[in-house]
Length: 100
Image 1: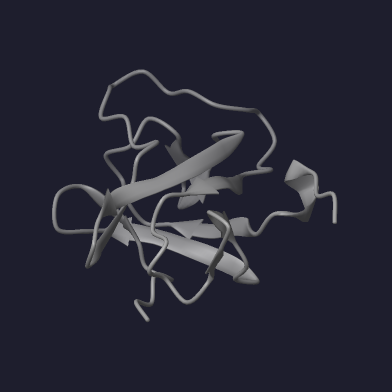
Image 2: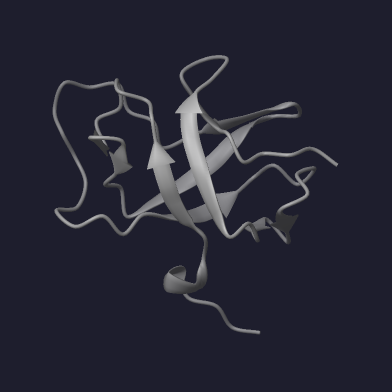
């Protein structure tokens, strides 16, 4: 099955105010990568700069998920209907992360 970025789950919310891609709880990055380590799914796209970045229109999707132990992960792609990003152990975490 061939998928495009539009087929990937959307980032429905981001409550991390200190990220350059966040604008009023909406992520403006083209895509986010979920990284981290077992037990902690960090948003690897988080950038703590004062300069705002990203797209004018909110279209953010999960581009890659490195958390193979998550129930929503299939071949390093997220299968959740959508994901939420929020404050985490370090800076920003995928709040939809659910370890097997």
